[in-house]
Image 1: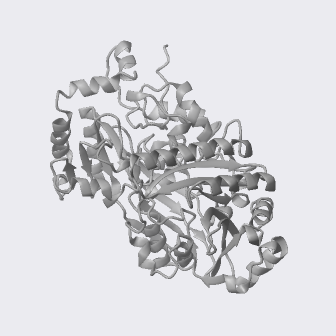
Image 2: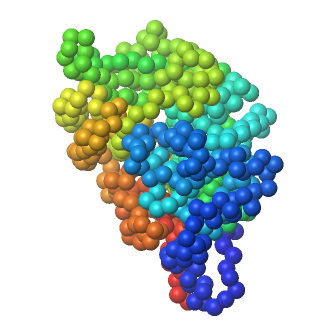
Image 3: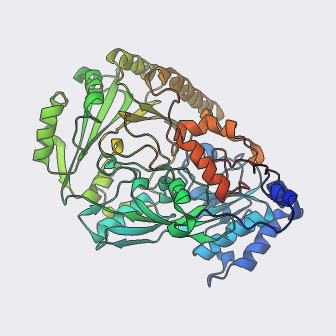
Length: 543
């Protein structure tokens, strides 16, 4: 059954009031002129854990406040003196402390943000335009792997790399379909779907979640049985910080061979890259076996002769041995010219290091939450349903060559396989059959000046507009974990209309958006859990 908040036993007018968009403003005014102080007082009175919550609470008077805030900010665009800062950050070491943060945020009328790994592309897990607090799940990262049942419980503060490491520590024949970047927090990744190099074999991370523990707006904990199937459906791909705080997930692990094969080959324009990328579109999703995933990274760099050229990196993970991979490629994609020397056999867990660009590093590198070099970036996403012609690809290359060296990058991730077998309404993530591949558009830079940042953001927006002719339409689909406020955002103070939210919501969720709104209305009618792209509740209908 759905979670319905406790309502005061009063008149219909009172009921209508508590469900209205003005309820949150009322809460803020009722907490007095010092919501910051009210929050801290409430927090210290409502945590029962042996470790004092004061030891994991940081406000702007604390000497380590900035280091705690900045630790998980992955996009340096939002790590500036002018970026909005939380009044308080809490990094709980126990679930009851997290519950206290939720309750006290609500009672004091402060906006609430929850952060797992800090990879939100628009910084929505740690930014707000109104006074707010951050519940940082950094310390809630326990992972318990059950090899016998091929399952695991994972707390939301764990990273993908930590999950991979713990699985590999217990078994060389089990894996899990999750992200390529090891520092991504599982809380945000699972909430938006989560994909990786074995997606074509086993689907998304969210497709393999079998239970969860979530806190509602009253700070109460629910498992799959008590939350009900509608909410359980919504949290597996409906986006983070929307329906509650998922503190842990139970996942179904998947079988992997003891030996897998990886390969990365570079092809330039002189090596027929355009024709190879064009051909790849026809076979990567629809002809390759499910055991094979081959993604392409495209960028433009100066060669050793000083001339600019497109570079296409074909990265492959095959759930099997080299001989079998070479046979598959020889049959379906001989133009690539893959050789035995291009291939390396290793365990699945080692392949997660390889695909992350960390080949040769010890497995312990997966446990390093600060592994990735941070930079400034603006990314977007697209889905491709029809192959892009060679002529059109050459037009795309012109954009790359006109821009500064390395200023634009595209990563093409193939779909098909298991992704095409799962219904688009099975979970909120709708991008299934009919999609050949997903594009991640990337521009990243290291000079943080306002001028450079504005130029790069403008470049990405112009390139995205140009790409509109070659990608999905009506709607132009996007991946919710690649947040992009350019495609639409909610209004201020939780007063977003259904029509306003549907502008971006249908691009992420297609027809599943309406069901997500219904779930949100049932479980969080006051819109406590919200951000600039969270599902809004409908107003309470009149009797």
